[in-house]
Image (cartoon, rainbow, N blue to C red; front, side, top):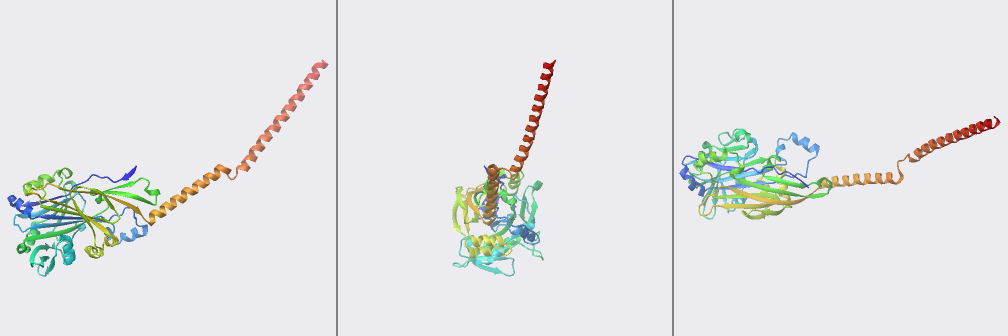
Length: 411
C-alpha cells in the first residue's frame, strides 16, 4: 500500500482575441510558447516550528518552498492581435504573478533561454530590451516589460489577473492597451516577446504534480518517492466548459495558436526519470552559476536547489505541414530516494521505542511483575488459613459423632 496525492489533472489554456480571425493561420506560424516548470518542493523536508514562526513575519514567506511556472510568449507584429489570454487551474492573486523580462539584461540568460548567440541592448526611452544576433547585427526580437505603478507593482492596464467563472481557476489577460504599446515598440524588429512567472504553492502544485509515497515512510531511514508530472495545455476535456466556446469566439476556431511549444521541467539531479511521452526532446544539466541569477536573492530556496544541482527535461512539439495541433501534453515519471537528518532521527527514535517496549515485554514474560512474590505469599496465607479452619471443623464434627455414639450404646 502507498500514500498518494493523485488529484484530478487540470489543463491550462492559451488563446488570442483577434480583430480579424482570418489572420489566425499567419499569426500561428510566427507564434511560439515557452513554458518552464521549476519543481522545488521538498515534501520530506519540513521546517522546524521556530523557522515557520519566523518566516510568518517575513515579506517573502511565500517564496521559501514554492514551485514556479514561467510563461514566455513570442508573437509577430500583427494589428489583428487584440488581447492575449491564459487560463490556469490555480487560485492566484496578482502578487503571485511577476514580470521577469528584466532577466534578459543578462545576455547569458537570454542565450540560454533562446539557445541562440544573442546580444542585449537596453533601450532607455522604452520599457523593454532588444535582442540582436551579433553575426548579422539583425534583430532577433523585442522583449517587452509590463508597465508598473509607482510602487513597482504591475499596472492594471498592463496585466489583469481575475478569477475564472465560479472561481474555477484564474484568467490572466494581456489587454489591448499593453499589447498595442508592445507591438509599436517591436514594429521594426518583427517579433515581440513577453515573459511572466507564476508562484505555485504546494497545494496548487497538485494540479500538475502527483506524488506517491510508501505507507511505511514514517518508520524507515529513507524511502522512494514517485512523482508524476502531468502538464497539459488546451486539452478541452480537462478545461472548464466555458473555455472552448470562448476560444472559438475569440480566435475563430479551437486550436492551440502556436507553431511550436517548448516545455522544460527543472528537477533535482537526484531524481531518476523512469517514464515519459513521445514529445520528450532532450535533457541537460543546469549550470548553477548562470541560472542562480535567474531567481532573485529573495527566492533562497530556488537558488539553493540550483546550487545543489538540477536537471532540465525538455519536451517540444511543432506543427507539421502547417497543420495546427489542438493541445500539448508533457508527461514524466520521476523516482527519487529521499533521506535526511530528520528522517534518520525519526527512524532511530522509532527503533529505540520498539526496542524498549520489546525489552519490557520480555522481562514481564520471564519474571512477571515486580510484586509477584508478595502476591504469591498473600494468596498462600489465604489458602493456609482456609485449610486450618477446615481441619478444625472436621475434628469437631468427628468428636460430636463419637459422643453421640457413646450415648446410644448406654441407652
